[in-house]
Length: 209
Image (cartoon, rainbow, N blue to C red):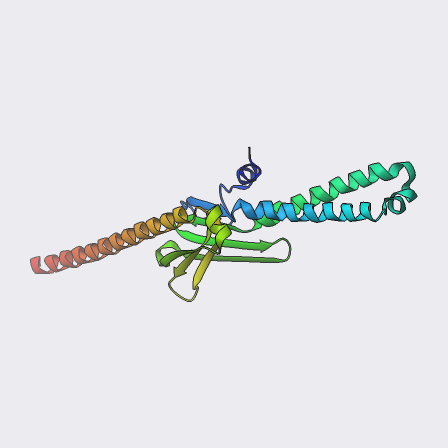
């Protein structure tokens, strides 16, 4: 099983804070797994380079000698803990940004753990247009893009950044928008029809009197 598949399965939401009664999740997305792999890889590369520099400069005796026989195991354990911490932080940062399309809304969550949190959302019926922006050659090769959702009102655009399968997400949003618009139109027509029938019934009763 690939790493991002395991992470996605562990982190996939069955529900989310503020979810309404009867509201179903149609799309749950995060940034493309490329950004997870990159976040994990770079700290490991820097760690390897630091170890290589220490080795090349013959600094190990100065680092390990104060610990005596415990020096090598302690260095090994410290390296493992550091690598594990970096991987954990990379996964945590990757999962903090996620994007949801439901039967009623589009929602973008962005968060830096314990520092910053933002939630932007709009009713699906207020979506005006949905476009994709491919931010370079890497995005073209790996199949990710920004999905930009233009909405009515002061909210402006909601951006689903660097997500995979962008065309599928666009299709889901537009289909649900059209479905919501049709349903709202039918509800409005039903209300008008009911009001007319009620008014005609009143007039018929007055004529009968």
